[in-house]
Length: 287
Image (cartoon, rainbow, N blue to C red; front, top):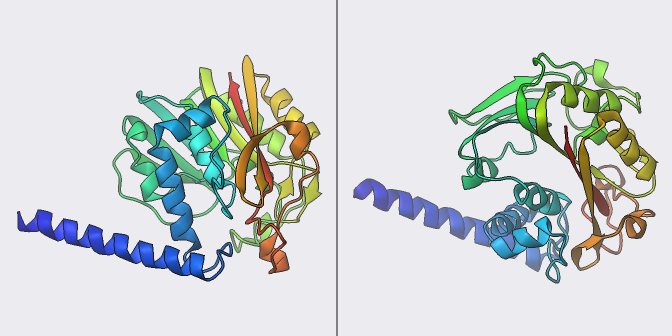
């Protein structure tokens, strides 16, 4: 009884602290990546993942609510897009790039029957969850056997393959690269380790082609190359675009001239206060 009360108090205090961070973020102008941004982003994504109406909008490509994901980076559409497309079944899932490696995501009920292998370039924070394991290495040359996984998720990772990973992700000078086409080798590797009829979920920043050194933004020709490299039995692509009031479902043509907001390098904001990508292509491929 006392332990339960203690847990409730801790949970309440944590919620109050989160409220405070979000309030400070909003009062300070809601500027991406400033104090309180991560709490605001996490709460928005959690609310979306626990709202069937929102998930249905992602699943059936319906119009999103006004100001959805206001001043939040593309994870606010990538995660609900992915979670709307999976079922609560037993499966072996590869998280290629470690974008699921957050407690609030790993604790989602729809993942409870999956064993998740998180494959990332270098060690980061880990969670002691029996169904979650970690492998560190290069996705271009994995140590994995053929036809192992039921599902592979690769959110906002493919654009970093073969690029300068020392800018944000590692101090290993060997990974200061400029191999712009290596993402195709990763897609082929995904097909090799995916079971027959297995599903691959990929997202990339989308618009006009941009080489930012530490990543590249994909255009339609590169999205087509992803699909051609995988040679799927079936495929679908959903596009989302960031407007000054939030994210919205869009057509490829609407996004084709979008530029990337590289706050990491410019250290300044544009008029729309985009946090990162202004458009994203979400690709589902079936082996």
